[in-house]
Amino acid sequence: MTMADAGTQDFEARMRDVLARQKQAHIKDGPPSAAKRIEWIDRGIALLVDNRNAITEALREDFGHRSVHASLFTDVSGSIGPFKHAKAHLKRWMKRETRKVSPAILGLFGARAYVEYQPKGVVGVISPWNFPFTLTFNPLAGIFAAGNRTMIKPSEFTPRCSELMARMIASAYDETEVAVFTGGPEVGAAFSRLAFDHLLFTGATSIAYHVQRAAAENLVPTTLELGGKSPVILSQSADMDLAAKRVMNGKTMNAGQICLAPDYVLVPKERAREFVSAATDAVAKMFPTLKDNPDYTSVINQRHYDRLMGYLDDARAKGAEIVEINPAREDFRQQPFHKIPPTLILNPTDDMAIMKDEIFGPLLPVKTYDAMEDAIGYVNARERPLGLYYFGTDAAEQERVLTRTTSGGVSVNDVIMHVAMEDLPFGGIGPSGMGAYHGIDGFRTFSHAKAVFSQARSDITAMMRPPFGPKFQKFLNSGIRR
Image (cartoon, one colour):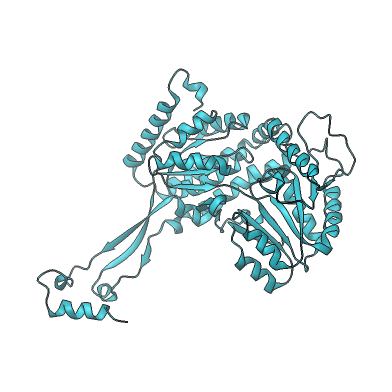
């Protein structure tokens, strides 16, 4: 359902109506069977497979230019994988989870305790522009596996993707199963105020404050997938060539417009120039040219292009050394899109805007440190990031970094890749988010873990009812002791 389709109707009333009908259908039909959940998942897989060319074209049009192969990898294949993982495991996830009875003597007489994973009902999904399909369909794997219905609000920054998504969903699902609502900030604000049974928001921390505040009006539980400044820590023991290849691959993927993109690099002072040289070589091998290279993605729009160029101007004015990695020395002043060459910012200072804001682009500050404790201290002095990346072969040092820092997740000797592990939870902490999903963690996030206790038939708890006597006192005494 698009807001254009709603015509003169009040779009907020229209969304409330769909929500009410989804909730009614959920109550009427009861918890869906494993077969029904698999059917929902299979429909999602079919949509992605059958529309893969339309998806890559919509992404290319919305970005100005976006690598077709990268789109197939992230937004098509990357969305199918979670569906297949959930399909393979949901029957096991759905099983009752037996828990111990306490005091244990109750179990001897037949009392039982277990957790029943029950669908929450209707889950709202607000998805972002950087990976419109991945960050909509990926959570659907957990939402469907848990037996929920869903309403989706995609980003207005990628209108062609949003309209395509609305058509795709409408062709495969009844509106009481899945519904898509497109539109601008006013639609998003109204969507956030709906009385969902759970709300997932993926996007900027600045917007998350408004979403969380709106959801609180109905005490809607939320999962917030945000971002932040994810650091790379290069150890003295790091293989610099390999590290540079992986860091720059992560930084240039989707032109750095990834919530988990490396946001700054901490490198030993004496190895800084080695990293710059290795990073330059790595980019040149991946992208001999950039301006017309079909594998190199544009910045999403003029607003974000200007924001990124403003970071460079500010850093340059404050004394940073700017290293533009432009292998063919192309002129980017005249171009049909918003491409920016991968750019290193050396000797950044904390008063620079680029060291304060999440970058979300192909710019990478490189900051030096003297000792690993200094690098750990620098990370800990800042807000907890969504990701952290350590490169090195020193096992004791690696353990120190992992245990002495706090982040949503970690990739060791790589960047971003922990998000691709279907059996690992994905989520942030503090300003980088709250809650997690993916795999069984997604199933549990979108399920209500209902505690169930079934008492023994024999009246063994009679002594716990008044009038209390010696047996009850003895029972109390057994529990009140060191």
